[in-house]
Amino acid sequence: MSDPRHIASRENPGFKTLRALSDDPRRQGRALLDGIHLVTTCFARGIAVEQLLVSESGKKNAEVDELLRGAANVECVILRDSLFREISGVSTPTGIAAVIGIPPAPTGGLSGDAVFLDAVQDAGNVGAILRSAAAAGVRDVVLGPGCAGAWTQRVLRAGQGAHFSLAIREQADLAAALEASAATSIATVARGGTSLYELDLSGPVVWLVGNEGAGLAPDLIAAASVRTTIPLASGSESLNVAAATAVCLFEASRQRLKRPANPLRA
Image 1 (spheres, rainbow, N blue to C red):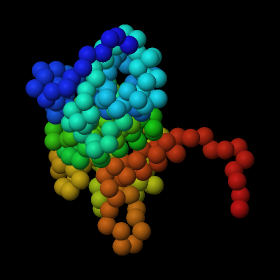
Image 2 (image 1 turned 30 degrees about the vertical axis):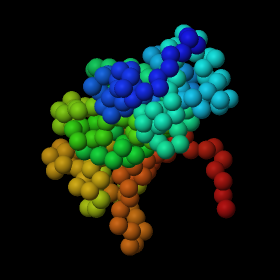
Image 3 (image 1 turned 45 degrees about the vertical axis):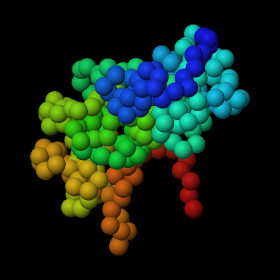
């Protein structure tokens, strides 16, 4: 780790830059990864880190100290605890954060299954969907206008490192991207669609996922190859959008798994 510099005042220009970064990462083209888990994952994936930010109390944490000792060539900034909390956005931060460059949007077509998000506004939902997509082996996630920013801190926290496994496109024209894809497109709807468990999901699929309240835009529903609904127990209203997306992705994974040679019998 290089010799750290210290920030002790809210009037420090460096602190103002960090505050602006935490508020609007896209404007600077950089993102703030807050917490031991995200920073550790970042280093493990070989992501280039521009700066490490550490609170005064965080320096005393053994895990933070280990991360700092392993980051010999990374600039380190020590902040007063109160200032670190302002850029962290959580009331009890672990005391370390990393500044990274936001990867450029991928070019070219989709590489297999994909998830398209239409105006999914809640950061927790977007992050959870990214996490489920990565866990299910999906690489491409395409966010249309109105979605929570993929590289904001809340989405990064909810994603738990999934961003580093995904090709993420933001502010995309979903209709145009759908038209350019050769995969089967499946619109997820709360009711009236074909049961998810009746679909053949053996081939590439583009999953269309809509806004928490309004659902998918009508033009996207109309453009989809299929509409699907997840069967629910009687009296259940609907699933959270992140939970519903996870069910869809892992049903596709289940269908593609080889059946065991010796299945268990009751």
